[in-house]
Length: 315
Image (cartoon, rainbow, N blue to C red; front, side, top):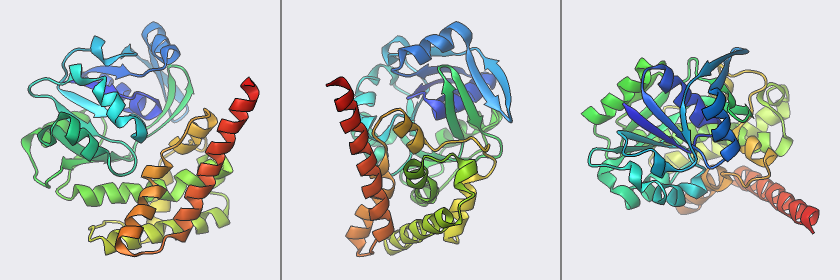
């Protein structure tokens, strides 16, 4: 299968590298020229269980150099979805499928508006990735499931084909007939660790050593579960602590959440699509979300401080 990873950062490279090893023609598209140049010159280095291996990959800064593909896996930051897909229309042919594996809620509707609802698959992955250097990432793929599905809940042949391609490469993937529930289950995992990791600047190893952080994470997840249940979403997560436990399962001590990685780069985060989504859905269904509101406020404050510090540095 010819696949383009649109937004091949740490997670995209982890997934794209493994799919390449599985015999697929995979193109990694990322706007960072240093990252792309390193992969084209030296290959992509994946680190698993502390051991590095090199994968020869195709990498590009622009989608227009890739051509039409069978599958577009969208992994850009949530707030870049429309802009990125607009610049990547050349990837889409008559039979192209567009799959969002992004964090948070709301991207599928943006993609459906741009390429047609009939082309879009939704999905969530528990695979993790942390970038160590340009062209070098930690790939947390072992034992991490990916779930995909049609927006209308049907189990289709094209969804099965994508799932089979992923699974054959070592990315355990199943097709779900409850993709909204799947997205919320993954949202709970992101709610449990993303903001708290960003606020404390702790990697997973240290994050999970602080009981007070665990208590705050469980409280945030409990709010999100209450919102989902009030909204009629069918969850598979039974208890709030389950999301906290699942978030770190199989990942190395040094693993960092994508939210922490964004802040370390001085970038804005996806907080509006994660804890912020919980707050918005809570307002719609009348469920209070004070813990998630606090986490949103704290991350927004950190983002503002980074912007102010950057401005001062260039003044």
